[in-house]
Amino acid sequence: MDILHMPSTRELSLEYEWRQEGDQHILHLGEHALIQIDPDRDVWVLRSLLKAPGITPLRFAVRTVEIGKSKAESWTMERQHIIAHACGRDDLVALLPYPTPHLSYAWELANWMPRR
Picture 1 (cartoon, rainbow, N blue to C red):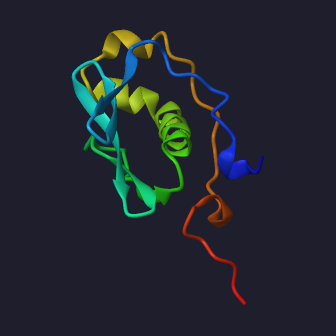
Picture 2: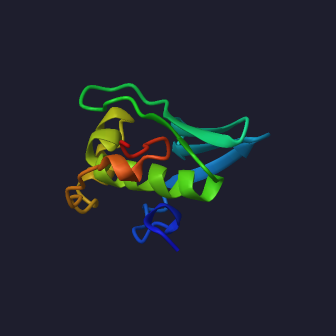
């Protein structure tokens, strides 16, 4: 199993929930939609839905829904304090552990190809 196929080892709080609507998988915090995973030909496209200061939009392709959910949960874990504030859930902020910083590398992205 390579790094792109490893499941997330971190877990979001129970306040976050995946909901499936047809082929779409959407991560919610309460009634706020955060991230959506949609099929697009042979891949699944992961994109952020929440627009708030401090949150850079996310959009990239992954091979499977499971990889997409893992990436979405990692992305959310790293921004959970900002997300909680943006969703009006200041009650969660005190309960949330601060995330460990994560650097994204080109080889982690599904569409990255090495130079020849």
